Length: 265
Image 1: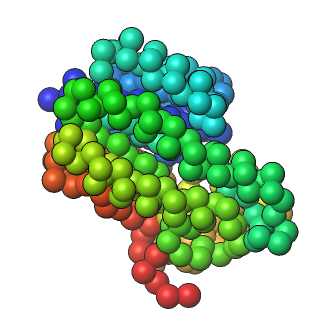
Image 2: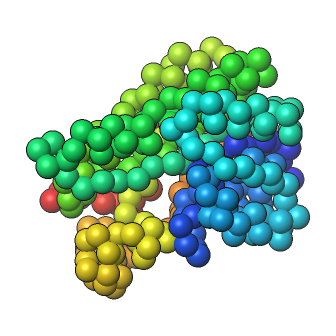
Image 3: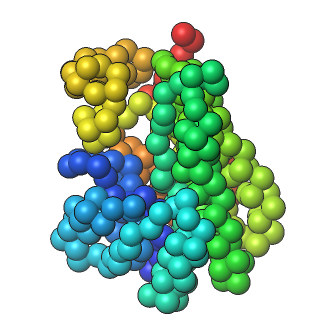
């Protein structure tokens, strides 16, 4: 019996922008390995395909849908479709997010607003529609994915990303206390600078002139442990928080960053 046997997990952002272990893909596969049935979403169905293939190779149960998590109606429909497919939602993972460079002066209002919608409003909307279902069930676990940018400086000015990820942490704390009497647990994973497909497809071009080795070296230099984690490290933390092993854990953060957030400088 797996640690998530017979549980249903709705993962917002279960795809990846390239091959390898992004957080969402890794969580989907690890949840399936532990016996969960999955309803996987991503803005792009193409980005979901490797997740689907890997879960099906495990003989796992997975259904998928495209969903823009900034769109209220699409989230509402996704939740309804998951409930129709499986009859319940035991686990909600809010994994969608993305950064934009700049501080208050150089960042446009449009970029600020889009960051708030993508990184924070999306979590609010998913919780809005899933919490009543979990209340009716009498149990549930919500896992929100933040970032070390929400708790410390991580090497560049990205004011909206940092502010919204800090907001995810506090949103999770407030909802955890509000819904604790309903046996609904809400926790946050705070990943650090992991080696995910995003590094190659986006960050290397933005911050290192396309030099993947250079950006990996920059990121590794901030990490006390002698290696860089990847999406599987986030996924292993998520399995614990979603499982009954974490039955007395709510309203807190699990930092997965190799010690970076406690190092000065």
